Length: 220
Image (tube, rainbow, N blue to C red; front, side, top):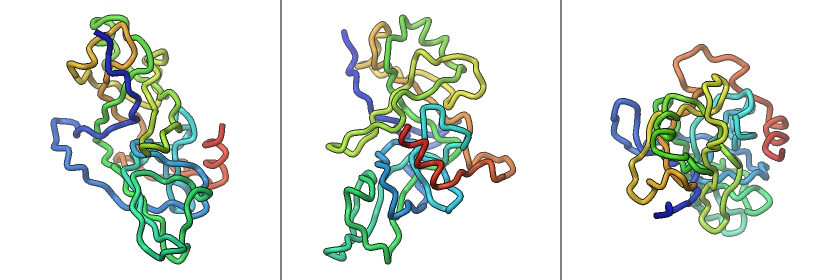
């Protein structure tokens, strides 16, 4: 039976060691002038300006991921009311009162595990199983749906390899009964970020990038 092949980005499902998925988030900010759409369950990166942006490309560039966006809050410039959305539509699609910050809520635990759909065939269960402990990139990391506000990023199954610089580590299969057709797209994998800004390593300037560079990467 064919899978329920749906792209939904990186959906938080728990923590390493079977830690509870408390859906805990940390509040950051998005620049009010940022025209990049940042979809729910899209990976985001920290910028040198103290704000976040959507990851620039499938591999995350040279900046470690901070987490995935869960939602935003801002004040509408016309109504002066607080607006809650599950994604940031981009400055050109909203009216923001810049007297108030654009708040972004990010699932940023470095031990966070995510469920992600594969964009192509995993061949068979043995092959899918052999992908565990390997690394991979995301396909269409910056894409999403304005109808749902959700990311449409998927695991790029063709990139699975031992290459250390790839964006994600594959740590398991979900066993979802609706997505067990391994020779079709849509098998759900469990992954984590290979490089995380909040991982226990010394912080350095290399962990952030300039606002202009991130915008450039986001439009590649």
